[in-house]
Length: 358
Image 1: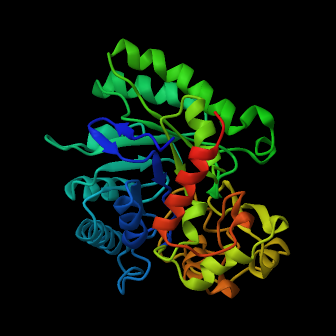
Image 2 (image 1 turned 180 degrees about the horizontal axis):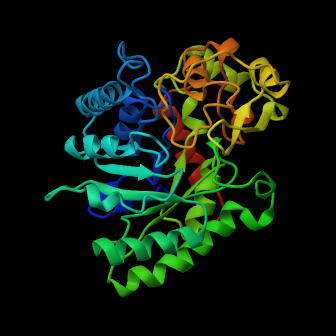
Image 3 (image 1 turned 60 degrees about the horizontal axis):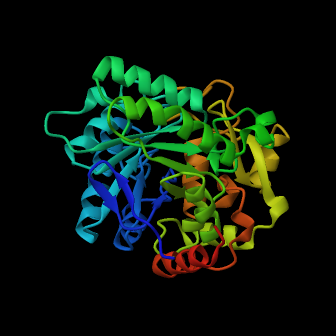
């Protein structure tokens, strides 16, 4: 059995896979276009996308918007496939990045790390950009649907439901991460049951996309059997030749053992899943890393009490400099054992999918 397609409004992705947005330079035009060329949905992450711009400290807004527009155009020049962006609600320049993405006619905006309650308000007449919130509960999906209906007379084009096995910042409390009540399978079913009737009343459907800890083609099959329309995968795409991170970043995944995965308290006020290293040990032991906050990139960042700048830590890691940073990773990162092409990865997932039992 081959992959089914994923329909989000009038967009049709040949395979039911969205490549997750991985911030501070991990998923840019290189990875996004490669995934789109294989029939998936490629996502450019906007979090501190302009970190390498020469004027980023002096004018982070201008630098980030410029870099975002450039990356979207670059991706477009490399693929005729579906290209989206991931824009966290918690970003200080959220509104500007959304507007820039719509100006560039990006296919999809995926938005989490907070509820994107006002996202439809940025659409301009004739805009075809699809709006896809990330939620971690059926309650959040219901609130968003009702708010968008009452204020904008529209529903989300799809929902991404992210469970606690994801990499990076998690929308869960620490004690919920390993609680079966918050398992992705349960969350996906609850969201489908909640948004299905809301969509039916409006004579439409809202595809639900499962995310967080999906690793094999068998995992994809399992989620589709539960009623999900597709999946979002991040970790699996890091160890690809086309991923925009440095080789040493990818090698950190290849070398990781299961015990290297840890939950950290991020300066932005959320737990996050990362690969253990000396930098994080130092933070844990109260060794404060000297920094000024040059960007104030996240609204919720506790600048006064932060032991380090998360933007600089992630930017350093992206370049393979782990003395001054660390890598976020999903719960299955330890299963990565080689770097492959996006094409080979998709073929492997397809094979696993077809071999899996429904």
